[in-house]
Length: 277
Image (cartoon, rainbow, N blue to C red):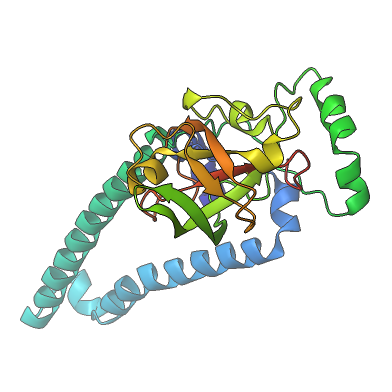
């Protein structure tokens, strides 16, 4: 219980550093049997290791010599003590450096501009065709709740990979094939995540032709295709050369693929009923 008490004292500090609430309720701990056993094992192992050397060291003394003040510590014991002090200092220094590195990384994660609003977002998956058919009604119902401000949908979660397909795109040499990362989104997705629309317009609910005639691209894709003015450029999205879409919007780059990846090109295709909201 002493270790739990110490952890309780430092809980607020840990929460401030890593914004992680640690629940120390006794009922919660006993529900998590694996966590309880792990903590117990760590406590027993730490106590055994920390108490082993003093016990072995003191047991080597002769009680008569100790009581008569004739205790002599051999040079080998002094060397062991010096080695332990050096090890302790090295481990303490390593812990301080590691703590600073972890804090710096966590601070980077909290303050990094991801290009979208990540706070207070919840993702729900619609798993059946019937649920997708009722998506407009469901979205309207969610918006009626006091605590819900915006609702959008897409076919991929932010931070995860998306599909990559070959498309014919407009270039100075005509229509040329290019592999482009793409995902389907509805007309509320960009606004819900507060992604910056740099030029052009968003998809429109009252313009059904946007599903086949319009796409939105990010900065990286525009640079990759050497489009200084991407609005109005042509992209074939469904393989039919007679059905060519136009770029209607340009969004600021955001980290769709996670921070481990370099910023990649991305194209939004409009579809009003996506299964992730």
